[in-house]
Length: 252
Ligand code: ADP
Ligand code: MG
Image (tube, rainbow, N blue to C red; front, side):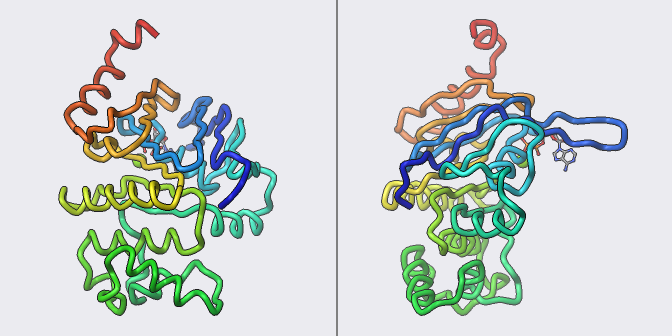
């Protein structure tokens, strides 16, 4: 994880979706730099391009213009095979729907992306312990609560020791208590292990855990602000509303 490069650099990224004769410009020159160990929340209305941006950062979608650098490597210069390997090693992905394999136990889901080796079992056990899931390791996803499934998905995202963890609405399928536990966990992983974390959310009580909130509108950067650190959802919601207000926009 030691690198003189920034974990993530997005330079003027444009992404268009073609649907028959029409073209949707989902990202219009997005700019974003993430420092090592930084926790970023991306907010914005539905359709503002948050998920597209996350997919672009993960190299799951190619871009029409601009550059995506992960640990200094330009994703566009890699072959599909290189990209798959690189993504596995450098990027941890967490989704709203957990995306665990139903037929595999919790521990086998965690091990899945990692190359087999002598230290894999020890690593898996360490992660299960750290995430409070050791007693549940033999359970299949269907026998776990939503919050527990998301912990397993986070462990799976960490098994290859990525420098960047990308999470798209990771609390969107959880009740508010489990959702807050997942947020606290991501925050701790960032603080303890220096992971860079990007979380897409429209919920103020999720974004309040971040060091920086980046707001997208219609596929472009609208503004950004830093939460006070008080973990106050109402305060964050107010900052977000101010950022979106036409008055604030007129003064920019
Ligand atoms: P968000 O996550 O902020 O809700 P998205 O990134 O999902 O926004 O979508 C941004 C825009 O791109 C929307 O207008 C959406 O309809 C469009 N879009 C997203 N994915 C596709 C796709 N696969 N094909 C066509 N249009 C898409
Ligand atoms: Mg989305």
